[in-house]
Image (tube, rainbow, N blue to C red; front, side, top):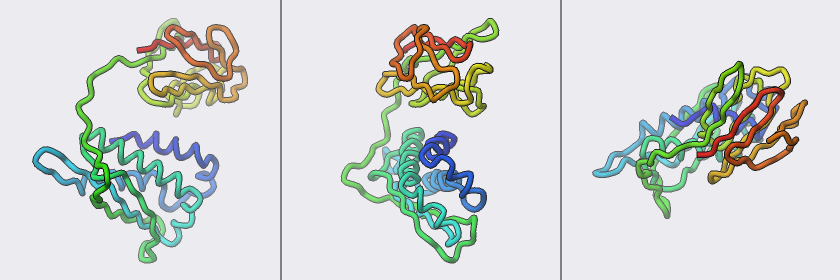
Length: 231
């Protein structure tokens, strides 16, 4: 199943602060994502050599819940499309066309309820199931702490370093900020960005705001040393 924690983080980053004020009750965005994923499983069709999953989803919300999603509808639909593609790729399913998500209001639904109708809609370019992946070496971060070394694979596009428990790289260091820095990897190229930390971020002893990472580079966060090793 795709990482729904990533879904919440990506969507939350686009509308930071809105969830705390608006989504205290009623339908939560991650509930929609979970229902979409379940509908893909329920609605998949098995052919001779292929499994095709639904790619068109009609999400119905109550009249009370729907207005809360108006401000984030575009972002929500975009992130749900990513969840659909990720789920299909992880399961080895094909899609008849690009993912499509539409939101509707159903006056028969009560606050907190939702309904999802999934269907297969033929597109101009069906997305076939991916070929089995060939295992490859991944880059990793080697965190030096407490006299030992902890290895963390760079296995996603975005890794956040900081003291908060929901960071991908958690450092127990009072000199580090809660969300101190991020490493974004695109097409094998890793870039480190300081997130406005209190004490700054260094690469090979030099203060940086943004810097490309090469094999063997040393990142300093607070007093913690992190070595970047490329694949």
